[in-house]
Length: 126
Picture 1: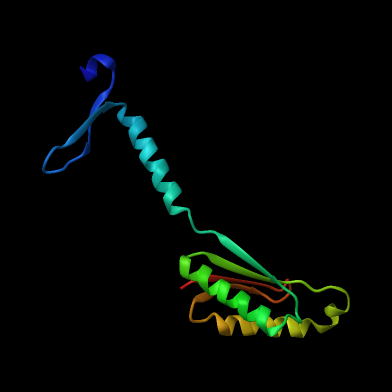
Picture 2: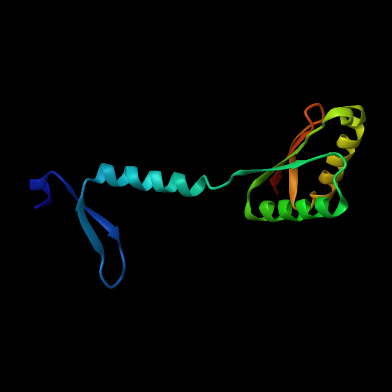
Protein backbone atom coordinates (compact mmCIF):
# COMPACT_ATOMS: atom_id res chain seq x y z
CA UNK A 1 0.00 0.00 0.00
CA UNK A 2 2.80 2.46 0.86
CA UNK A 3 4.80 1.54 -2.26
CA UNK A 4 1.77 2.26 -4.44
CA UNK A 5 1.65 5.78 -3.02
CA UNK A 6 5.44 6.23 -3.37
CA UNK A 7 5.93 6.52 0.40
CA UNK A 8 7.68 4.52 3.11
CA UNK A 9 6.43 2.61 6.15
CA UNK A 10 8.32 4.19 9.07
CA UNK A 11 8.44 2.90 12.65
CA UNK A 12 7.93 6.06 14.71
CA UNK A 13 7.81 4.62 18.24
CA UNK A 14 8.65 1.14 19.35
CA UNK A 15 6.92 0.34 22.62
CA UNK A 16 6.21 -3.02 24.22
CA UNK A 17 2.44 -2.63 24.04
CA UNK A 18 1.89 -1.35 20.53
CA UNK A 19 4.55 -0.09 18.11
CA UNK A 20 3.54 2.99 16.12
CA UNK A 21 4.20 3.03 12.37
CA UNK A 22 3.27 5.67 9.82
CA UNK A 23 3.18 5.82 6.07
CA UNK A 24 5.19 8.89 5.04
CA UNK A 25 8.15 10.16 3.05
CA UNK A 26 11.22 9.00 5.02
CA UNK A 27 13.56 11.68 3.64
CA UNK A 28 11.18 14.44 4.65
CA UNK A 29 10.78 12.82 8.08
CA UNK A 30 14.56 12.79 8.64
CA UNK A 31 14.86 16.41 7.51
CA UNK A 32 12.16 17.55 9.95
CA UNK A 33 13.77 15.64 12.83
CA UNK A 34 17.19 17.22 12.18
CA UNK A 35 15.55 20.65 11.92
CA UNK A 36 13.83 20.19 15.31
CA UNK A 37 17.07 19.01 16.87
CA UNK A 38 18.97 22.08 15.63
CA UNK A 39 16.29 24.42 16.97
CA UNK A 40 16.36 22.84 20.41
CA UNK A 41 20.16 22.99 20.67
CA UNK A 42 20.44 26.68 19.65
CA UNK A 43 18.64 28.11 22.67
CA UNK A 44 21.71 29.77 24.19
CA UNK A 45 21.77 33.48 23.68
CA UNK A 46 23.90 36.48 24.52
CA UNK A 47 22.51 38.83 27.15
CA UNK A 48 23.92 42.35 27.37
CA UNK A 49 24.36 44.53 30.45
CA UNK A 50 25.24 48.19 29.93
CA UNK A 51 26.91 50.08 32.75
CA UNK A 52 28.39 53.49 33.44
CA UNK A 53 31.67 53.79 35.37
CA UNK A 54 30.03 55.53 38.37
CA UNK A 55 27.18 53.04 38.84
CA UNK A 56 25.66 52.87 42.32
CA UNK A 57 26.32 49.87 44.55
CA UNK A 58 22.69 48.69 44.62
CA UNK A 59 22.37 48.90 40.83
CA UNK A 60 25.65 47.06 40.44
CA UNK A 61 24.56 44.25 42.79
CA UNK A 62 21.21 43.92 40.98
CA UNK A 63 22.92 43.57 37.62
CA UNK A 64 25.39 41.02 38.99
CA UNK A 65 22.53 38.91 40.42
CA UNK A 66 20.69 39.07 37.10
CA UNK A 67 23.86 38.01 35.27
CA UNK A 68 24.35 35.08 37.65
CA UNK A 69 20.79 33.98 36.89
CA UNK A 70 21.40 34.17 33.15
CA UNK A 71 24.65 32.24 33.48
CA UNK A 72 22.81 29.62 35.53
CA UNK A 73 20.34 29.17 32.66
CA UNK A 74 23.19 28.68 30.19
CA UNK A 75 23.20 32.09 28.51
CA UNK A 76 26.34 34.12 27.85
CA UNK A 77 26.51 37.63 29.31
CA UNK A 78 28.25 40.65 27.81
CA UNK A 79 29.07 43.68 29.97
CA UNK A 80 29.59 46.98 28.18
CA UNK A 81 30.71 50.19 29.87
CA UNK A 82 29.84 53.45 28.13
CA UNK A 83 31.87 56.58 28.74
CA UNK A 84 30.47 60.02 28.01
CA UNK A 85 32.06 63.44 28.18
CA UNK A 86 34.62 63.81 30.95
CA UNK A 87 34.31 60.15 31.88
CA UNK A 88 36.84 59.42 29.10
CA UNK A 89 39.52 60.93 31.33
CA UNK A 90 38.88 58.21 33.93
CA UNK A 91 39.11 55.07 31.80
CA UNK A 92 40.96 53.36 34.65
CA UNK A 93 37.75 53.43 36.73
CA UNK A 94 35.90 51.56 33.96
CA UNK A 95 38.66 48.94 33.71
CA UNK A 96 38.59 48.52 37.50
CA UNK A 97 34.81 48.02 37.34
CA UNK A 98 35.22 45.30 34.71
CA UNK A 99 37.88 43.63 36.87
CA UNK A 100 35.48 43.71 39.81
CA UNK A 101 32.79 42.07 37.63
CA UNK A 102 35.24 39.29 36.74
CA UNK A 103 35.91 38.69 40.45
CA UNK A 104 32.22 38.66 41.34
CA UNK A 105 31.28 36.24 38.53
CA UNK A 106 34.21 33.80 38.74
CA UNK A 107 31.99 31.24 40.54
CA UNK A 108 29.16 31.40 37.97
CA UNK A 109 31.09 31.66 34.71
CA UNK A 110 34.40 32.03 32.95
CA UNK A 111 35.72 34.97 30.98
CA UNK A 112 35.53 34.47 27.24
CA UNK A 113 36.91 37.87 26.22
CA UNK A 114 38.06 40.96 28.08
CA UNK A 115 38.63 43.97 25.81
CA UNK A 116 40.06 46.84 27.85
CA UNK A 117 40.16 49.14 24.85
CA UNK A 118 36.46 48.82 23.96
CA UNK A 119 35.47 48.24 27.63
CA UNK A 120 33.63 45.01 26.81
CA UNK A 121 33.62 41.82 28.86
CA UNK A 122 32.03 38.53 27.79
CA UNK A 123 31.36 35.79 30.33
CA UNK A 124 30.15 32.29 29.44
CA UNK A 125 28.67 29.69 31.80
CA UNK A 126 31.20 27.36 33.40
